[in-house]
Image 1 (cartoon, helix red, strand yellow):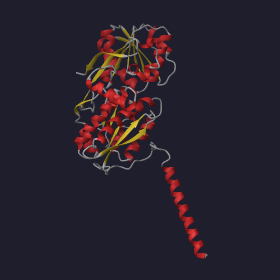
Image 2 (tube, helix red, strand yellow; image 1 turned 30 degrees about the vertical axis):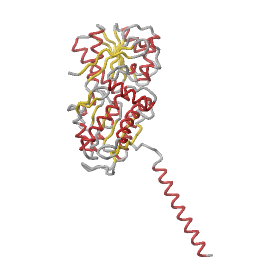
Image 3 (cartoon, one colour; image 1 turned 180 degrees about the horizontal axis):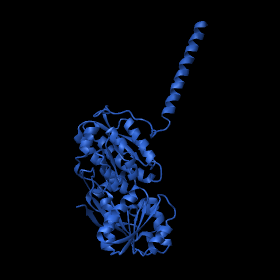
Image 4 (tube, helix red, strand yellow; image 1 turned 45 degrees about the horizontal axis):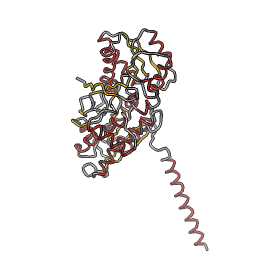
Length: 403
C-alpha cells in the first residue's frame, strides 16, 4: 500500500508540473504575431542565417486596422507566388515559408511586427506598406541588417538612405508630379486646390507638388485633413473660395470616399485629379458613378489594361480567389517575383546575400512596371494616368516613365 501511495503522489507531481509548463507556454504564445515595441531583439551576427531547409520570409500586412481589404489583397498576391514556387520544387531545392504578421495599419503595430519577424529568424521581409510604417521600422531593419520591401511611396523614404529598404511601387516624386502635369497641361489650371492627408503619404506628395507648381509658375492653395476625418467640407469650400479652378486630392481610400461624396453634396463642379484610390473597385464600389466620372487618377495599376502579362495575372488571381485583383495585389505580386529572383541569385538563406541580390534586381516584368533597382532601392519608375468613365472603370490615358 505504501508503494502504491508513493507512486500515486509521484504521478500527481509530474502531472502538476506538466500543467504548469503548458500554462506558461500558452501565456507566452497567447498574443500571436506581436512583440512589444520595447522588447530587445537578440543581435544577429553579420551573415548569420536562419538555418533549416526553408527560406523564411516575413510578410507584414494590414490584417486588421483601417485597411484590412488592402492587406488581404497584399497577402493573397504574395501567397499566390509563393505557392506556385513551392509547388514547382522551391528555390534551389528549398521551400519558401511565409511568417505573416499584422501591423494593424499603425506605426506601433509595424514596429511590433518587424521585431517579431526578426526574432522568428526571417532573413528578408515584405512590408510594411504605408509610408509612415515603412519609416517607423527603418532603423530596426537597418540595425538587424534585414532587408525589407515596401510599397510606401513618400519621397521622405528615399531620404532615409537605408540600404536595406527596397520599393515595389513608384515614388510620389514620379506619381504626384504626374498629377501636377495634368493640372497644368491637360486642365490648363490657373490655380490648383490641393487637399492632402496629414501623414507621410500626403505630406510627401505635397512637397513634390509645391516644388513642381513653383517651378512651372502655377498658383496653388493647400488644405490638410487628418486620416479618417469624416468631414472635409470646410477644406473643400476654402479651396473653392480661394478661386481654385481645379482640385488635386492626395489621400487614402476611406478619406477619398468621403471627399468625393462631399464634393457632390456641395455642388462643386471643378475638374479633379487624385491619387490612386478611385481606380480601385474596392473603393469606388462605395461611390456613386457621378461622384468620380471624368476624374483623372494617378495610379500604379490600370485594371482594364490589355497587355498579356496583366491579363494572365488577373486570370490567375481570379482563379485562386474568385475576385479581381487591385493595386495592392498587383504591386505585391510583382514584388514577390522580384524577391524570388533575388533568392535564386543569392544562393543562400543569408540576409546579406539576399540584400545584395535585391539591389541588383533587373528586367523582371512586374504588373505595375518593370523591376529595375536603382541606387536608392527603387524598383519601379513609371506611373499610369487613367480617367474614370461613367461605369466607374479606369480608362488608361498614358503611362509616364521617369526620365
